[in-house]
Image 1 (spheres, rainbow, N blue to C red):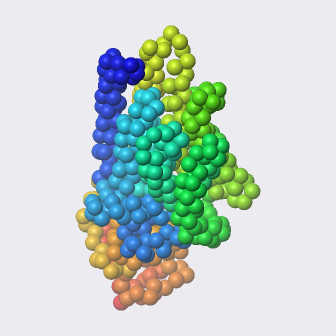
Image 2: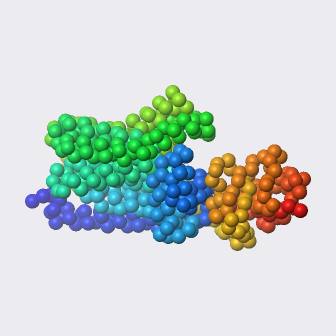
Image 3: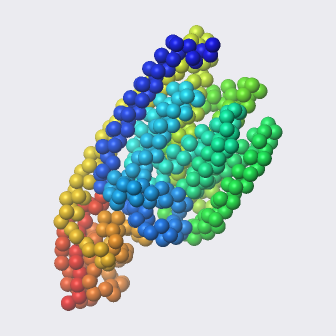
Length: 485
C-alpha cells in the first residue's frame, strides 16, 4: 500500500490542506480590501492609458515602448469584463496573484508537498515587493504567475511519463509564449527553458519529434516581435532613465524579501540541487527540472548585469520579480529534501517540512505587516482625496489638456480624465504658445503662478476650477480652464 494513501497520512494531508486553504484565504482577504483604491502613479497611469486605447492602437503604442504587449492585452480583457473602473485595472494584477495561490493549493501541494505550497502562499503575499505588485497595474504579477505556470508545465514534461503527453507539450508551449510576450527578461527565461528541454530530450532520446516541433513553433511565434524588441533596444538607449543597475543583494531581496530569508533560501536551494544531482541516475527529470529553475533565475540576472556593465544600465530589481515563484518553489523543495534526510523524523517528514515552511511564512507576514498597513493607509487616504477632488472637477470628453506632471507620452492626467487629448508641458509655456482657443491645465500647485502669467501674456484668460487636490499619489494638483480673450 502506498504510504501516501494510508488513512493516517490522508488525515494529515487533509489537515495541512485545510490549514493552507485558510492561510491563503486570509492573504487574499487582506489584499482584496485595496482593490478599489483609486490610486495610480506615473507607471501605473501609463498602463491604464495604454489599456484604454483601441486594440490596434494599443499594440502600436506598445511596440515603441520598453515592454511586449501581453500584459496590456490581458488588462484590456479584464477591463472589458469588469468595466472601466479602478478595481478593473488593479485586478489585472490581483487575478494573477489569486491564480498563483490556486497553483500552490493544487499542483504544487500535490506534486511537491506542502512546504513549497506554504512558502509560495506567504512570499507571494507579504514580501515588501509582493505587497506592492499584488495590486500594481503593471506586468510583474502576471509575469510571476505565467513564469511559475510555465515552469510547472515543464515539470509535467520532464517527470510525468504517463498520461496524454501532447497536452503537456501544448500547455507548456502556450504558457511559455505568453510569458515571453509579457516582459523582455522573461523572454530570456523562456529561452533557457527551451534550451534545457532540448538538451534533456537529446540526452534521454525522448520525444525528440515533439521537442523539435514545439521549439520551432516557439521561435516562429516570437519572430513577429523580435525585430520590434531589437529596434526598441536601440531607440530607447539614449532615453533610459536609470543611472545604475541592481546588484545581487537587491535582486535576491526582490524575490525573498529580506536578506535573512534569501540566505536561508539559497542554502536550501543548494541542498536541493546537490541531493537531486546525487540521485540523478534514478530520477534525472527531477534533477534537470531543479537545475533549469536555478539557471532561469541566475542566468537571467547574469545577462542583465552583463548588459548593464558592457552596454548601459538595463537591469532593475523589479525585472527579476516575475522569477520569484520559481525561487519560492525551489526553496520549498529544498526544505522537503532536507527534512526527508533526517532519519528520526522520516515518519513525520510531511508535517515537519510543512510546519517549518509555515513558520517561515508567518514570520515573513508578521515582519512585513507594518509595511502592509502603511501601504493600505497611504493608498486609502490618497484614494479618498482623489475621489473627493474628482467629484468637483469635470473635463468634457474630447477636450485638450496640458499637464506638467510627467515627461512620458501617457500621463496621470490622461488616466484620471479619459477621452481627452493630453500634451506634456514642462516649461510653463515660456517657449511654446498653445494653438487651441480653449483648453484645460492639470497642473502642480507651485508652478501655477508662472504658467498663468505666461498664458495671460499670450491672450488667455485662466480660471481656476479646482485647487490643491489629489490625483492618485500626486498631491497639490490644480485644474484650470483657459480661453482666449
